[in-house]
Image 1 (tube, protein in one colour):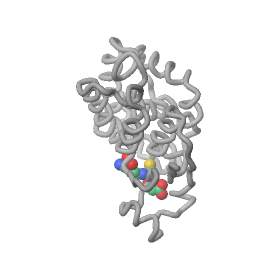
Image 2 (cartoon, protein in one colour; image 1 turned 30 degrees about the horizontal axis):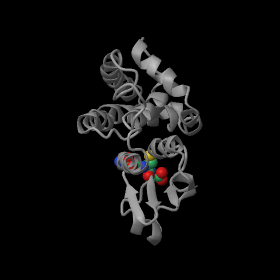
Image 3 (spheres, rainbow, N blue to C red; image 1 turned 180 degrees about the vertical axis):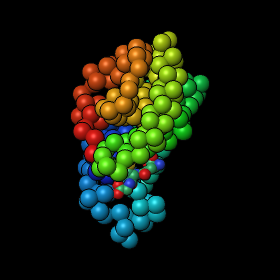
Image 4 (cartoon, helix red, strand yellow; image 1 turned 120 degrees about the horizontal axis):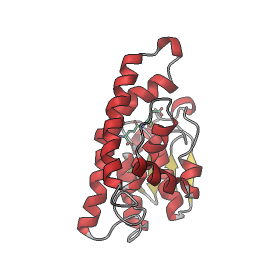
Length: 206
Ligand SMILES: N[C@@H](CCC(=O)N[C@@H](CS)C(=O)NCC(=O)O)C(=O)O
C-alpha cells in the first residue's frame, strides 16, 4: 500500500497526489504539516530527517523530495505514460522538472507568501512585484517552448507537466499581472480538462 504524508494545500504534495491520481494508485494520505503538525515526531523524522512533506512509503520504500517522488512513481507505475522510456525523451522531461525548481519556485515564493500568507499591512510590495516580474519572464520561456508542443515533453502528458502544472495554477490564481501568453494558457486549459488536476491541484490558495 502506498502512503503519502502531507497536507493537500502544499504545492509539493499536490505534485504527488496528481501523479497518484493520474496513475490510479490505491493509497492513503495523512494530513501532516503546518496546522496539522506531525513533522517533529521521532517516527516521521526517521522517514524524512528534514521533517518536510511530501514523504511517501511505498511498501517499505521511503521517498522524499517531491520531484523525486514524482519520478519514482512514474518510473514504477507509469512506464510509457508519465515516465518516458526513451532516454532522450526522459531527459527532455527531466530538464523541465528541474527548471521549475530553479526558475519558477524562487521568484514565486515571495509572491505567494506575500499575497497569501501575509496580512496586507505587512506586505513587501516591492519584493512581490520583483518576484512577479522575474517569474513572468521565466513563464515566457515555457510559453515559447509550448508553441511547438502540446505538453511540456511532447504530444502527451508526462511527469514533466506535473511540477510546472502545479505552479501554473498558482501563477494564474495569484493577484498579479498576467500578460498574454497564449501557448502557456492553452496548455493550462488542457491540464484543467483533467479531473485529477482539478481535484488535487486546483485548490484554493492558503
Ligand atoms: N524540496 C522539497 C521541499 C519540501 C517542503 O519545503 N515542504 C513544505 C511544504 S510545501 C513543508 O514541509 N513545510 C512544512 C510544513 O508544511 O509544516 C520538496 O520538493 O519536497
